[in-house]
Image 1: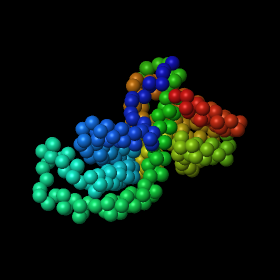
Image 2: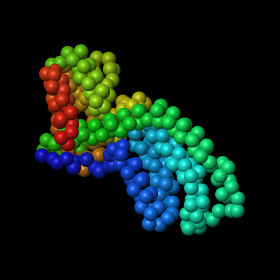
Image 3: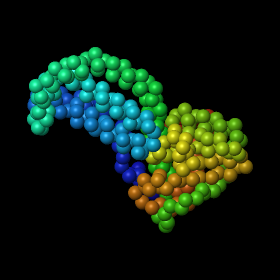
Length: 279
């Protein structure tokens, strides 16, 4: 039986962590050194993170939100502390001209920052919920793959790019629709209705919220004829540290969702969340 470290490491952030990682260095730098590198370095990291999350999730929301966050951070410190900013830049050889301070006070004042802050609020209100949902789905996808891998007992072969028939189910369509609605509400997966069946889609990389790539993502399909089909994408499979037996992995992923369906059918949906949080 495998452990919870079956998936390659990746950062999964809680909302408060980036704030703490910004404020603590900012305060310490100001008290100990009197310089102002933190907001500009932090802004650069946020900008790079936006690019990384775009490449990972394939959602343009990430670079837009994080780029505007970077601009808001930089603009605030340019407006609120122009002298200290110029002095800090001079320490790394970025010397300012005689009119630099006047230019900052005229073009990068608090009024400009306030306008940018309002734009940020509008953008985050519009795009933030989608990005946060995508991050929750990614986290849930990691947990689903950990759950499936817990009982994998062999490493006989690697990935094969085909759907796997994992057995049968006895649930009517309306019951699976209810399950799908519950799982979507809890940001565990997204549902698709391709015709004769219901497909529950999840991923550790490309977000299921990007409809362009949905056909390439992992899914569990509850077919109307009672069959249960599993597809695990190559990109998800490569996130495992070991090459687990693919058929067994698919079978156990199917059993995971059958348990979820049984919990839902017996009105003990809380067991789904307990199991998800166990890994």
